[in-house]
Image (cartoon, rainbow, N blue to C red):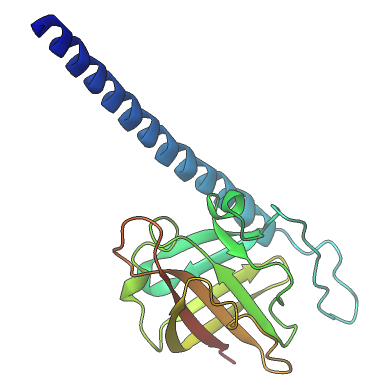
Length: 195
């Protein structure tokens, strides 16, 4: 009888260690993917635009789902994160997701960026109105100041809408910030371009 109890206990210990090891590997793998994407994004924004025109007109590139687009910097937190086209789990594991179908800087409409509160957007609960986001793409660097915040239901898609001709950066993440598991709400930062 005791031998059976020891066997079961040993199996639980082995199972627990296996799950812990797998979780640690997943975190390491995600962090490595973010670092690799950030290196790729920094190379992208540091190279001169290949399609620069003589009259200096801005040419906005097109991106496919999963493409590395640029870098999002948060000066207050001293953070730089890669921006990836798309907001599916695959893209959000690598960096900040650009919501497909929303604008890019200088397109005079709503730009939506999303990220996980427990990975790329860790410490975003420290941000306040007046803090800034810097979006760096291959065609320029754009600074946005936070002007408002809002908390909405996780399923609320009404925040994603055209704001043309006014450009607005909307940054979304799960809320509450310290919540464990799938959070019931979303925290929204609204930011306007700084001239």
